[in-house]
Image 1 (tube, rainbow, N blue to C red):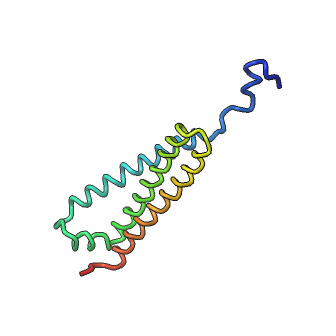
Image 2: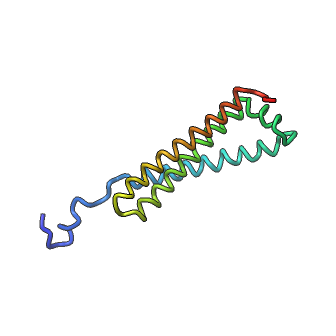
Image 3: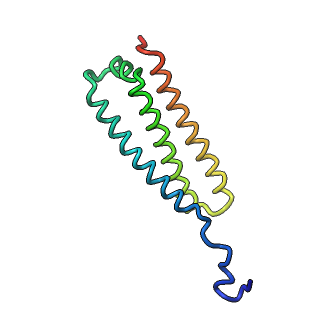
Length: 128
């Protein structure tokens, strides 16, 4: 493999075959976000009263808490995918690795805390 020609310099540096998978994951999570967050807004607008007790009673139903957990997972995964692209585009030294690790911890911790809060309200029922 020569280094004098253009093909010699780029041989072996082609596509890693991961870009299209990442692109599809971003589009699928965007679509699921659209559906699930539309469901959330419509469901909240259809509540008879807009107070804490009505929200807790609504969230204690599995028909509300399970889609809300799915929306949480989808939103945080979409956030992680989008910010990964930003970090990979603008960070060019070792700080890129650190930023990606921090991003992963942030996305997992945020999703875990949100899911914990949903489950706590869903399983505790109406709290005084």
